[in-house]
Image (cartoon, rainbow, N blue to C red; front, top):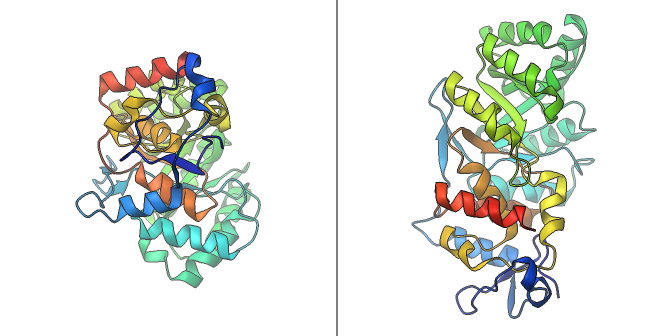
Length: 321
């Protein structure tokens, strides 16, 4: 049995965690007496005092959002029972932010169908994007998003990867003025765009920025996130697991002993707690297409968060892998 991304977690109450440094990788590959993650996560979410997720304010309004959201870039091809259960469990665990985009295949339409059928619209914060050239094409794509998401009001629309950013931001501001959208922003997941991204952040008033940031991909923490704090913009984080690199790096390894100090029982929780403990980060949006992953991720919004010293220890640990 291996300690992989999600399926098994240590029964921490009765078994000490094994150190997971490079020298211990082979010994840590076998995890005794494990519990299914969905069972442990469900138990933790029902413990009472610790059931409310950490929420952070959107600087432009003060609205509080749970720090762990849900991304739909992959595997949202049809409104399956599994995806419906995923969204229902996400909402039931206190999650709100669901991020999607027209370029994510059928994701917008699938989210819209499930949210309508499950009666979840009032409980969720729907975020999507516009990625088109020209005013007419951008407006057409936005109207399509309204139809696909089956809603008359979208919480956030951001310009996807800065595509025709000046034109699309003008359209988004018009829609915000009409009350059809609540927030506007910009996104990127490429460090090659950071210089242009910073330029737009400095020249425009934005509610949200969305950027790639992970424990093994910290460049945005040096440039983009401090600027978001300075400019009063909510930072939403995509690719918080480093495009899967982090899970591959720790495959077969048990959590380090100190993970228990910040309430982590799975690698996903450790990776997410690093992200959401950053001062500028309002929400992380890990891709989530299974109910057990929704519960696992939700647990990262609860319990103690790493302080500055613990964050540095997490960085040193991953850098040494």
